[in-house]
Image (cartoon, rainbow, N blue to C red; front, side, top):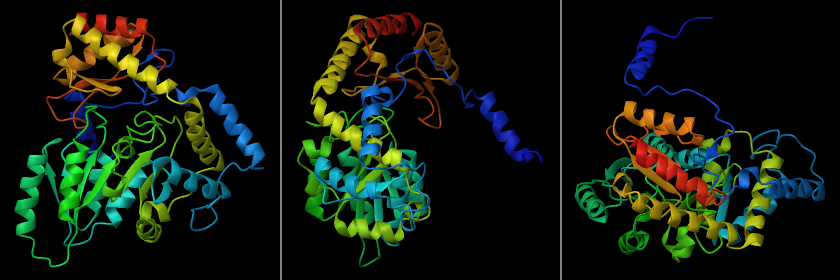
Length: 385
């Protein structure tokens, strides 16, 4: 087997030297404050059983889809899933993708055209950035959650755009994956709508846990008609896999024809589709009970931070994602190691995932975390930081 080129070996060596080297490991058996499984659906036995029963009812015994959706992979469960998602998310049309990364790559690489302008929050997910990079549009970042910064960037760059027919896309998230905070979506929607721009919102970390039935912040705020496209994912609050783009029928048709991550990939398995269906139905059956438990845990966690006088280390967030800033890769990794040794599964988040100097512990709260676990975690954090 041939060796990795020397220049790539040097890059890896630099990662190790800078304490930012990534590796795969398994920390089974620890108390979960790490995963995005906010409601515990990923390991829910009732949900597992209901999925199996749905496959039996639909007389499905397939291990795989056999091809892309445009070939042999457009399984009959898609015909049940996408209309159900229309109603759940209050959307005109839904197109299911294999993952949130695929969905964002497909949307941003296909829709914005040469001469168009994209303005995106500086902290948007890597999948959005990569999709934008693959488009032919010009893109500009604005300061995180800062509408004034956005307006300044839009005014400057639209005034000097020499294309007669161009579209403007404003891109943000409803809950940011590393900070756990939210923008003023009503203000963003008002700005984009009044100017004829196209607002795109990634709801990956909102669906399942926010909204009256877990449908996310956009429906909760009544902004569905003000948003050009929404990305929702099923691997977090819903505990399964896959994603979808929500928008108009025309947008769906366009993506089916031009979104390469959709066109040229094998479709999701029937079992995955059944799990997505069952997870949404199961959440509706449960009502607000898992969300209520999660909200209580978030409030208790924040009260404990205040009691132990360490709230100053945390990014302001009212969501399940709580970021404890510990600048410097070596130091944050040391604190993470101490927590792991005490039985808590919490990892350090390093550059380039977050800006250099903003290294942190990303603590994810869940409906299944006990008050005793949360209290002990905060007590240990107070002693370590």
